Every structure is written in structure tokens, then in C-alpha cells.
Length: 314
Image (tube, rainbow, N blue to C red; front, top):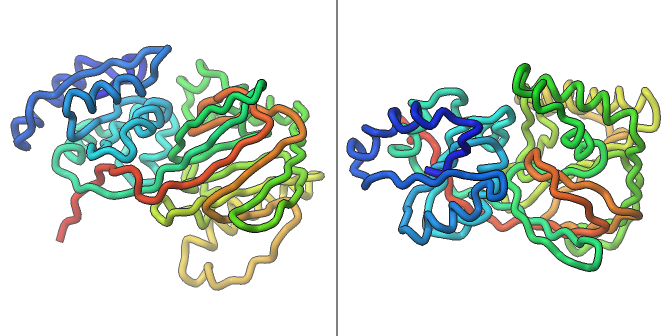
């Protein structure tokens, strides 16, 4: 059990888990507490050294990302005990939220599912390169500034609705990105956009589908460039995200309805993406900011991470 003491009630968690290992035939649970300096990576390394077959990440998206980065590719399975506001991976896996008993039941009696693990290499100032994993989305531009402008106190009080206030603050800033990119083996292209989001999966809080063709187990990512030039551009984005993705694509009949391309939204899909920016930009991964970069490359490793999901019932 790797847990964030800020996100979970440790006494409640210990009481809830006490009966589970014995009932399921498991050995005694090992406990590892995250810190501000180490949100889960070092604890995951120690858990693997200690012989863990199952690692439960109890915390927010940052804890899950840090743990997954280490155990991806190992023999251990990752179980989620969603405890944050976003819970993005849990939402995209259709796991039950805010239900401790159910989450622990899935951890000890569920089945394993292979999912993709996305990676990004950020080129820092001085040509230093940092390699990081992400499970849900990587974002630049308005998306990263929204995370930076998040009021954590407000987020704790009203949950995902705090993103609305963060968006309002971010819209007052300059968000123009000048991007040159190469997708897979295609040629280099240029685009000007307010936001670039690369998704290993596509759902956001409030059941908003941002990337309708992103699947967590298809070996590819979907990315979107948001390029509003006016109020009309923002209306085009709203139409794509809330009407087409949120309504039409949810039904068999709706998916047959032809939908025109719009200038404000450009989708691409692939396995590898190289990006060069005109100046340094902040990057967010699964809801946390990871500094600034002028260039990066990102790719997907198919089936690299094993996660616990509910066992199928007849």
C-alpha cells in the first residue's frame, strides 16, 4: 500500500484493509507513505524490492502516475484507491469512486488488465532531458496554465468545479503556441494553437470526453490542437466537445451522423510525436505541472502496465 497521507485517512484505511489479505489468501500488507519530495516513485521501487505482487496506490493522480512510472513493465499489478479530485485514470477505467470497500475488493479479488503507458522526454534548458510517464494526458498552453492557476483551497472545497475558476484566470494570459511537429513517419508540420493535449485516454471530470478516439489499450495516443481565434472559435470547440463528443458519439445512431471539421479543433492520432516550440512552455502531466520545455517527444508503450479491474460476472 503506497498512500498519500494528505489524501487519505490512514486509520480508516488500515481498518478497512485489515481483513482483506487473509480473506483473499494474501500475505501481510506492506505500507509505504509518500512525501512531498517523493510522491510515490521511491516507495514503488522499495515495494518491488520487497517482493510486492500487488501495489495499491491510495492518493490522487500524482501518486498514481509516480507509482505507475516505476512498476510499469514489472510483474506487479497496480490497483487504484481513488482519493483525489480528478481520479482521471480511475474514471477512464470506469472504476467506482469514493467507495473504499469496493476499491479494496477489486484490488484483492479483481482481474488483471493490460493498458498502455505513455512516456514523454522533455528537453530542458541546457539540453538536459527528463523522461517521465503519464497515464491520461500531457498538456501545454492553456491546459498547463490552468493547472498552474488552480486554487488548491477552492479545489478542496468544490472539487472539479474549481477548474472553471482556473480557466477564467488562464484566459487572461497569452496562450499562443507556435509548434512544429512530426507524427510517426510523416513530414514535419507547423501549427499555431492555444493548447496542445496528448491523451493516452480521453475522459475528463464531469464525464467530458475531450479525445473521443483515445483508448487506453490500443497502443496509440490521440492529440488535439485547440486554435480559437475568436468567440466563434470557442463555440466551435464547445460544439465538438460537448455536443459531438458528449452526445452524438455516445449512441450508435449519433456516431453515423456526419460532423464537419472546424478550424478551431484539429485531431491527430499516432504512436510517436516529436514537438519543437518557439519558446519554453510549461507542461502538465496527469494534472501536475512539470516545469518548462522547448522541445519534447512522446510515445506509447502498448500493454506496459497491469491494472486491477473488477472481475467479470456471468
